[in-house]
Length: 97
Length: 243
Image (tube, rainbow over all chains, first blue to last red; front, side, top):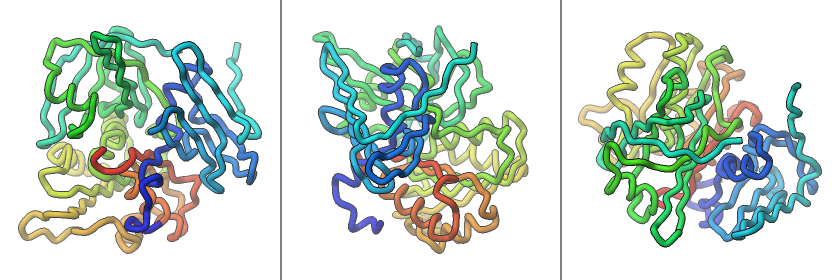
């Protein structure tokens, strides 16, 4: 993409890495190396490679291939709302005993 | 689970006019991986909280403390506090190390290409310091874009690392103001530059790009165009310049 053609929203985009702390708070494990799959186009990517938009009341993670919304996270004083309907799955590592 | 902890400021070092490094002593230190970050949280007396993520600049081999290198952003709630208020001996709340995606380990003995814009060099510096501490000799190239020579963070240390002659090469590009008699790059990163810097590392190079979103997009797209597979490229965008 040409720098001069980038719109403001695109410039605000960061990576899934930017919500690593929040995800670790929710799942209690490191999540950015977790494989995930887009429900819209089937693209496989690690959570850290998703496009992240964080300058809003919630965080939105989009597919880096088709830009569909995969995960939405909203925090209120008493709850965390985690909506991952745009992701087919998140593959979490199992702790070895 | 990583908990919030209270670190103590051990040292503050100016790097450039707008950038300082803060050495923080951690009561619950945990060895990090180069490229990871810490979340920093400030709490006002009325309970208002501001939180930001800052990349670790130091190498994992250094125990019980970390360096965070932070650029002062004019409207930044957290960075202005670090630059204008925080003093040695003060305490600051943070949690980490965080992230497992944008990380490099010296044991991964493959050619390494690092591309930085401005303070995007910070996590890459952790990788280079780790590389040196682990005595790795994998072919490594850093392409570092700064506005002016005065803005090039870690310049003296990078020159020392380069002088160690252990397979590290460094390419600077200055987009606004260049040193007198400068024969290196003096433009934004473009495909011709990427080609010259990336090609000698071959197509198996692992790539880490960190900087303003526009720079990261251009560099990542350019590298894919010259034949590097997207899954070898890891990016860390930090949004628009100046916010």
